[in-house]
Image 1 (cartoon, one colour):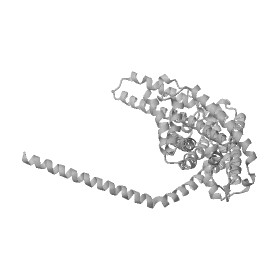
Image 2 (image 1 turned 135 degrees about the horizontal axis):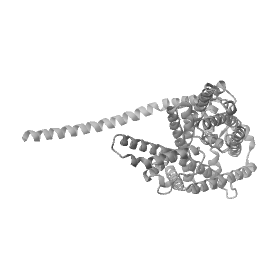
Image 3 (image 1 turned 90 degrees about the horizontal axis):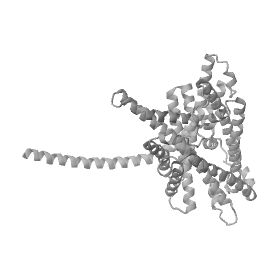
Image 4 (image 1 turned 45 degrees about the horizontal axis):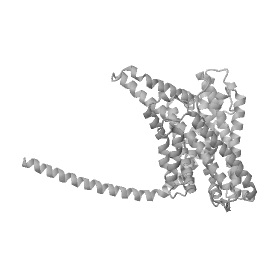
Length: 469
């Protein structure tokens, strides 16, 4: 695209996220008032405004979003590790990266490390990221050709296709409920936090984009190669750019992996415990189990819900009392968090962009584009029906129905553009898929035919023996 169209797209995405951030913040304040709790989760907000079914749908969207994000990070990180270590296989790099962070987060026996350990590792990686970014900006400014920033290959369709990835990179809405709780629900302070907190990632992305484009040779406005790959290849012995680039990539991927691993594991553990507790309650109702045996499960469910309410997706600390968790639940949650993304990441380095684009275009747009305006509109209507005197004081988002439609329309537009592209590519691949399916059917048919012949022969032989008897 070039720097100017990319910067324009990032600013538009940032403006959309600021508006959605105010929507989510107002949702949090209203839910805190309704439930009379100091903290609320997105699940609780969705249940209040849209019912349990909508909350379940958003829960599935959230899980798919996190898995897709993990897939992208594992694929990218595995490719970088394979290049740095001289490995021939991209899959080997993905396995090493996933195993390393699985041990860091969950421990070798999936017992979950203490929150202080994972938080300490996360803080170190964050510091490495900031220092490496400063080094790249400082060293790269002297070697950059900033005239390349004026070259572009812009088309509106290309920009719309890239915006879901930009949204995914700039996303921060999952931490807004926690911010509202930390600021004691004060609207003015929340507005400043949303604006300033979202502005910092935008500035970092703009700086990185400018330096990367200015350093990498272009061909008609398109970069000749990925900025990270280009900077890693500049090993002349006198520049620290390759080292700083490797560190910033590793730190960014590492902090993302730690946070998402913990979040998914905690979410899946809640599902497993609730499912197991439901089965035990059914057994008690049918008389197959004594009621006293479900007390431990109930305690586990209460603790899990307390933690999920007190945290939002940005918190990487693990404060759950480990003695209340069964070993099987811990192992299952840890493996479900790490294994599915790893399997998808083994598909190759191209999975990185595919996973990012998918996450931004579908689950992210549903979870953070379409749902928040609908939920806020529902809660506002309920407050007006009850003539809540405090409703106007909680209005963080200044707009009404028209603004809600604009926010939802932007998310829907990105989804439709991405869906059109994906359907077009699927139609191009359809002949190959049809031929492959025909071969599989033929092989399966041959196998079934052979099995049928063997079965008939066996039956005939048995019938012959029975006749003789």
